[in-house]
Length: 359
Image 1: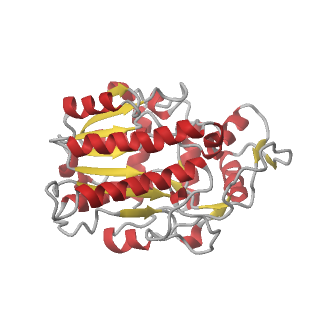
Image 2: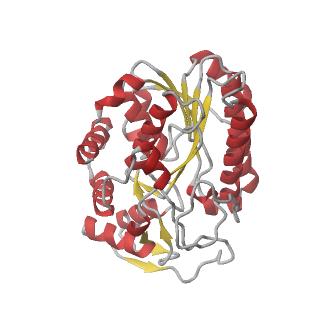
Image 3: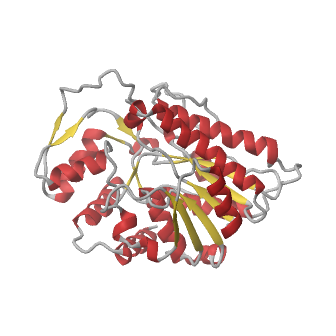
């Protein structure tokens, strides 16, 4: 991978909340390969086949199983391991599940986020934090142009609302405690809003890619709820590359907090696809499987966005970040992971290296 990041992370203490999850596990591997001292704090992995498990990541980093809702334990992690950089990814991540457990969703995504920010604020070591929220934090208008970072936040479902709240928390802490003229102005915080992330190692329930892979493995038809819904699909290493680039910029001379702000990472608006398009491409790439539209849905009253796009122009203009690979390349990476019979840490690293050679 791009070695210019080595000096930025080598021997640095980095805390990742949610490191047992799909996105967090990939980030932990990247940072470990860049020489960082990675500390992970999260609930146990969701399944025995998660990326965290098959890569034996617990043997590569300092992995601590815990709950971000436990402030005393969170504070103890900061005090004991003294991280310099914090990436907050721990969350209840499923929209439809948030209807079943709304209080737990808010407790985790709002209360847990406050716990992380408070521990960060009081830490003597941590000076940079990035809060990984969601593209669903925007008030949904079903608009055909991408949402910009300055657009109104909102959420018609508990998950989306909780992520909008997480963004408001980020702004409140930034404005209240980390302004350039504040006493603690050495501390910087940003938030990241990403498109629908796809890649190997995700086995969450009620999420499109894992649902596809489970159906194909069981020799069943893939059931899709909303075939015409359009999402900003992107390969997992695309936004994580943006995260590294943003970290680098935030640590440079940023007296006016230009980089300590909100950021969109997603595909170009003219390169987005419907659920039907994506599933068709996956089936074609795997060379097996079939799908049908689910017509007997029980939860037809649940709000689900039909059209969701992100404007990535700020990331292009100020970070020099851009989507680097096509959707077909992304699906090839995805399918290669799920087809691999001998999944391990080195296989993930090989995908990371291959991706960076394509940039």
